[in-house]
Length: 447
Image (spheres, rainbow, N blue to C red):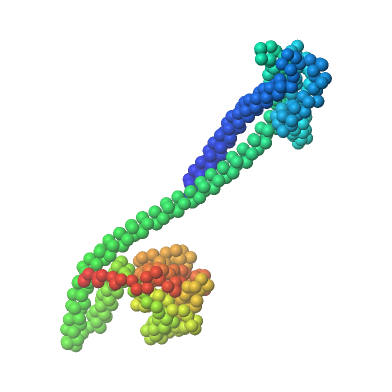
């Protein structure tokens, strides 16, 4: 993940949090106004209901007075208490006569309890807030004023309710924000995955197009180079036969020059063949193979070459090695390149060991280890580059071709070993390939 992506994610997350905070604050304000309007409407309806019930308790002609109150005080208190006992926002209800004198006052028990509990949680004294008074007149049928009902809506109780609603709302906003951030993170990683996948596909497409172009170019170059080389080789053979037929004119210097020229022509032919093999690799045909037998055949093929160079070739095979899907011919070529490369860097008396074993993740491992001087640190990053060679006379194609073959098998090849302590090339191959038998590749163009 690049720095620009991280910066964009942080900025967007901060904007999202700020948006949620602003939206939450606006929602709380609207909630406060809504709760206040709702409780005032409920209070007015409750006061009107109490007024209607009070009208039903008295004769039509009687006004609210002390005589009537003395006779019905307990009944009125029970009536009012029954209506407001569960109302957590009504502070008290008063019944007044037509002159405005208070006759009965009933306090809401639930609102008092809630306010006391809320104040106990506050770190400082919170001054009580004023009540919102709702006045509802009690009138006779002829609209004569008999008295009034005053209902007080507690601001403290509304504040308690708003605090509870505010906490619940902030919990929901926090959960929504966390879910949004989680979805944002998931979306970001999925977007990065798509971008990376698209980049890999584009790279693969460009690589395929480049490989196709290089293959076509390689075929043309091979054709243009092989013909002159073949002609030069034939001319040198004819010249060698002519010199052999005339021993009186034979000159050791001429013979040495002739042999040197033939050697260079062979080297150029090998270079052309290797370049063509790298640029236009044949499609592998996979089949289940005993890798120990394949490696043993390669060692038998190169045994004479190693003995002539004075280099010992050792085998360290794990018995009962699982079979592996390989293209035997191509894998032999990769192993030959590694062994020849090791033999060329070792002096007489050196040792090359080939090991096979089962890997810890179900794969099969092949190692080619030598006890030579190792590879310098500055060359380790470049040894698989095309045409890179730290050895005079090398083509720089042996290791790239080996890696190409291993990767086409779905495996990996890596360098191990420290400088001055030998070199280990470790190949890891999956036991099964996605296509055990791939379709045959079209024949290469004749050169």
